Length: 220
Image 1 (tube, helix red, strand yellow):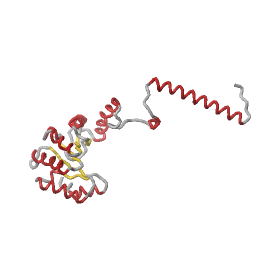
Image 2 (tube, rainbow, N blue to C red):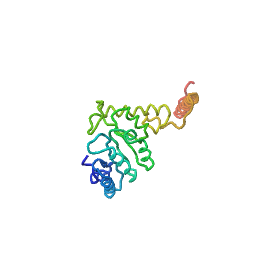
Image 3 (cartoon, rainbow, N blue to C red):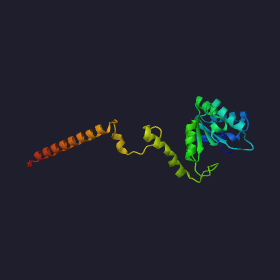
Image 4 (cartoon, rainbow, N blue to C red):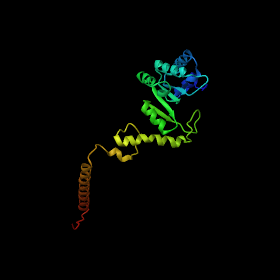
């Protein structure tokens, strides 16, 4: 707030980060739209727009609707929402509007239940923000280091159930690089026995060859 304006936002994006333009810096449609366009003049890289949806004496529900609408019209890269979820605060039609224009929607959450709500509502992703962060963290007294694994959670359970490896990180070792297909349990066990027998047979033959090369005649 008051700092995340076009100059700083563009500087962060130009440096390889993801700049963030705070919507609440601007109370008029013209001022907000011009800020987005000014940022675009300063950087050709993606940047986010931060929108906080909480009660305020200065920013009204009408402002929240205006911010979201202009972000869709200007086709910004993405929006980071804090506070109330978009679908409950201004209506699910705003999520649909953003999706149609290709704007990615993220919500800053402080609990697993809110992360699951964001997923159900159609958000593209979430930011796990614990009690130690600034702004408006949830009062659950859970730190980010605890919250993030809990949320990534939940998603890993789903991935293990449905096999969708793109939905969440999965705990695997280097041996996964040896997997080339997905056999049945019976096929896998039969293959393991066959390969073990072949390995033992080839190993035995290699030993015999070596002994013969050195003139050793074992009693077999």
